[in-house]
Structure formats: C-alpha cells, structure tokens
Image (cartoon, rainbow, N blue to C red; front, top):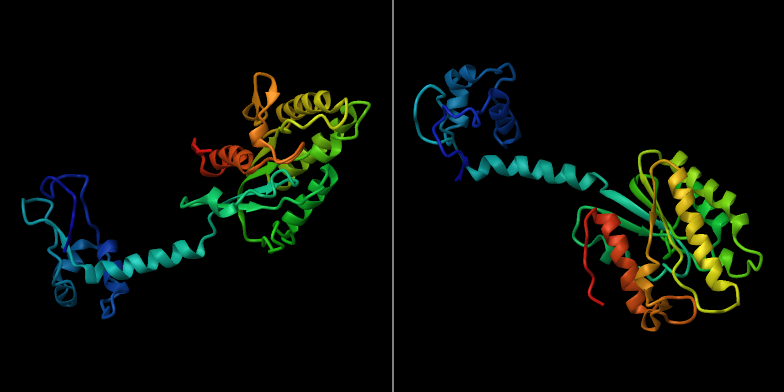
Length: 287
C-alpha cells in the first residue's frame, strides 16, 4: 500500500485530494467504467460505481480526523507507466560541440553520464571558422552529423552550443590574428540568431607547441579576441580552458600528445569544462 506522507490529519491544508485526481486513477485502470460527469468529491463518495471501483481507497474527510488516505499499487501503476512513456518521448536538453581534432576525442556518453541531458560531439579534424559556420547551418536544417557520421537529427532541444575554433586558423597567421575578428564575431552572431533560446560558449584555444616563432603570441592574441567577441554577443560566454594546460607559464607536457593535440589526460581536462556546461554544475574529473 502507498500512503501519503502527511504528518497530520486531513485538516492539514497541504494534503488534499480532489475529484479530478480520483477520476484520473479510475480512468487509467483496466476496469474503468465510471461516468465522466463526476467532477466533485461528493459525487465520488455517493456514486455506487465509485464505491465499487475505489474500494481500496479510504476517501479523506477534511472536517474530521480519520484514517490516512491509502492507494494500492494496482491503481498507481498505470499512472506511473503513462508518465514513463511521456518522459521517454521527450528529447532531453542537448549540448552540441562543434570543434576540431582537439576536441574530437571527447566521449559524448561520458560527458552526459546519467544526467538528464544529451551531449553531441560534431568535431572534425582540420575544420576552420568557416567550416563551423557551415555546421551551424546544417544543425539548423537538421542535416548535421556527429564525429561518428551519425545524423544528429532535427528534433533536438538544444540548450547549449560549444564552439571550439581557431586552432587551424591561427597556425600560419604570421601577420597576427586581427583579421579573424570579423569571422569570429559573425560565427557567434549566427549561433545566437539561429538558436536564440540556447546559451553559446566559445572555448579558448589551448596552448600550442612552438611550431612557428609567432605561434605563442597568436594563441594569446586570439584568446583575447574570443573573449572580446563573447562580450559583444548576447547569450554568449567565453569558456577559458587555457590556464588548465599551463603551469608556471609553460604548457604541461603530460597533457599533450604532440605539439597541438591533447593526450588522454588533456582530453579529461577539456571534458571537465564540458561536463560543467552540460550538466549545469561543477564536476571534478580525476586525471
């Protein structure tokens, strides 16, 4: 028997059962043949069919102290089954990651975990800012595929969009990265315009090895550019992961597979920020 959690008699205003509740229970049961015109609690108490169908229910009496309201599991089970079907048909809030080879190894299932959310990784090696812009169009049209070439679909309830761009754009910019301001700003604006109800995050570029003499300065300048653009676009935030890969001013070697891509430990550091965004709370990843 399932009993109410009320700590007092039925005179307590926090515990009330109306006719609609009892009517829903009867209609969902396998022997429901109660008239549909019973709307009040008095109708339920006086109707003979109600007395028969609801014989396991002790109707509450608000004016007097009496036995607690009891409801058998046989009556509750159909309600629970209906709710489970409704929950299964509802798509959970989704976080979509559009990135490069730096974020391609992020495991979507581990990011979402057991939380009531979904994480979709749409990272592709070699992508640049323009490629990310094209992916936003495909996401809006419902034709985008993830990093495993599986269709993302068009019925997603997108809550967050994470943009991880710039790595392949700044590597050979020997004259600086100022020319990338307009493309980055246009990318963030497009994300906000196409998906006005979601939060857009632009991830900072992680430290890069000294492939060229201008690499380090380009990384710092581009991250400053990303922060500036994020402040100018509504519903856009700057996701800073750069400091997590730095110790005493130098990149942490164990977090990198080569001069550009993070190792398994480095991927876990990235995942820490993505988990916080997806699940909406702080989360610690052991590395």
